Length: 304
Image (cartoon, rainbow, N blue to C red):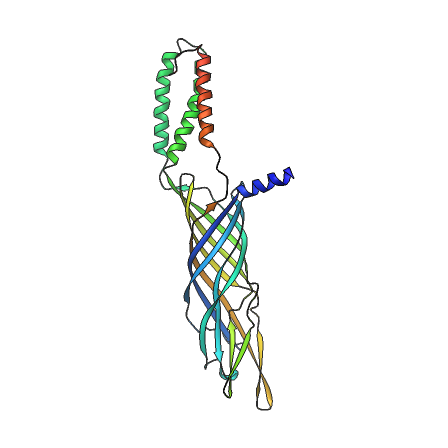
């Protein structure tokens, strides 16, 4: 039980939840009786909502899973299959929910401002410390070793404080799959008076390949927001499908096929599920330990 609790706590500390909102630009192509694919409607924009859960490993890479809306299925409507290539009308895309999962790599942060100010501040502190150190060396021979350790700790703290004010961006290339659990039937029909109207659900994919690039912006150690550009290509349920109708005393078979792809741009706020560590207390303890070591090395000399 203790091992399971430790594993669960470790996994929990690496999780990030990101609600997303954005826009999707989908494109659907149709082919009738193995003709050349054509776009019955130009690319169309639609709002997109989603949420994602990321698990990051120590080396910067990790896995993600989530869901979002999808608007690539378009109704291709006609009354006569034999003339559907030219005589048709379209209905609005249907909003569906898709599951997403895959692999993501997180690069090291690229800072917008160089850390020269941090190095300058640290060098000034070291020069001040060394000037005081030279005067104290006359009364204490072992003082230089202890102050070098404390000097290093102070420079690291000063760099961390300076980096808290610097903005950064981190690249997040990703690759994965999308899945729609319950897709529509390829064909639907409706009788109006003495006429039967047919609907071919073009772009009715159930699995798709997704790839993209994320941009995570932050300041210091704080992750502020993410921009994610994603490309989707439908690969499942995209084969030819046959519609059989009656024309007089004979049956007519008409084949239909479609292709679907989309670009999406989303904006999200990452919510870290990690427990905050008491770093400030640890730093205070380190400084107190450093000061005590300096005093003991110099036989109770006055702290500089």
